[in-house]
Length: 340
Image (tube, rainbow, N blue to C red; front, side, top):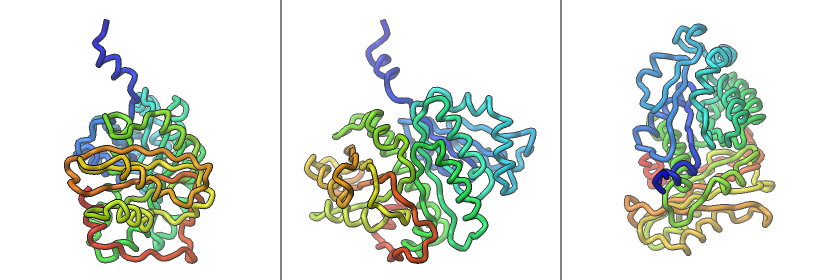
């Protein structure tokens, strides 16, 4: 008879996080260095030089015979051929995961070309596929066209596609040094993925399980993510306001179908605080919307609370001149976001 702990581990949801291309691999490096324990990290790229500096549990060079490790040259179709030529290795790398998080930057070569393909392979093996993608700046005209085409293909196989709009980050942090501004994307993804995986894998104040996650993110379409922070006496209301004021995608929420809310707080976080945060960030959604939330305690946060919300089934308004312009975020918000 196997030890009880082994039986429990065998029944736990197996989670893989795959970073594709330069941006995706950088995010994987960030996750690995942050010490994520509840999921496996996997980096895939057509550029062997970049891949060599990435820390991950698994690394795979795509299409060695096609690109010779020199990258896809910004051509998604080249990257796709490279991934297809490595199909056996790709399938082996993602085999057995109940949940696959895919991460890529849209508009370039490897990320744009391979993420729809990886989503397809993931769905074929029965994984819940959740994709995080970044959308190019307004000035990157041809890259936006390429990004739109890739996102359309991705949506056919990704259960949920979470779009992070670079222009939103620019509006929140117009005066932040470029390395820190772009580093925020990695931190948003780290905070989101780690929060979700830890809550279904580790003991929590309010637990989620794989079935909860699938009920919200399965076949849910486009999603937006938002993060809020609060500290001090009025920390819960501050976190709610912060979350609602800083979405990372322009989108219409009227027809949003579901929401996943993850709360993290210090040792004094109460059930009442956690539920109020969940109620606050989903206020205005339809009464029939499926909302689930989890909460974890972290000694590192002290009196601070942090709330991450993923709202699915939204209608994106990418590069919409009529969309409300975002105000620059406070230095406190940016400091929290950058120091995740």
